[in-house]
Image 1 (tube, one colour):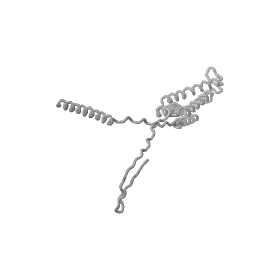
Image 2 (tube, helix red, strand yellow):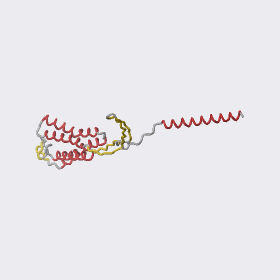
Image 3 (spheres, helix red, strand yellow):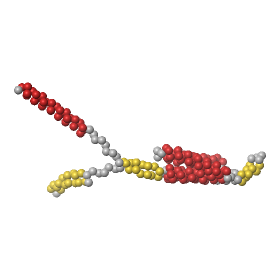
Image 4 (spheres, helix red, strand yellow):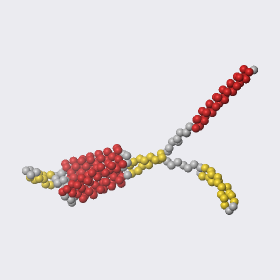
Length: 202
């Protein structure tokens, strides 16, 4: 009889231990933080062309200002204009974290004016006036030759491609979470009386 009671007690202890272990495991499972919900991203496309156009406009004004100038002032204006034309948009693209677009812009702004210059110089009408002095006539002056106009056309094409095709960026931002509804009871005391209120949001 006693052995039967011992068996029952042992069985009860085993059941209690097993159930308590199961409850502990369930508690641990419920206590674990739930995985975060996936965040929905909103994709927008923006054009920042005005920022690069600002440098192109500044470079153009510097080049125009160098035309009537001479000597050191002319060289300085042309140098600053060239730097603004080449590296201004390059820096704008880098500021928008678009390294590929930055180097594509720089490549276009170097290659197309050089190509335009080469095409223009082939159509220049140059005649050697004095072989001994090496003087030329016709449109061989650097500010009059078709080579210079070809370089300007190449620069304009590079600027158009850059500002039209390379200055578009994709921005991803998390969508704002929707507000959750709720019910909030309240108590208003007025004129010696009390009134219960119930405020709900959806």
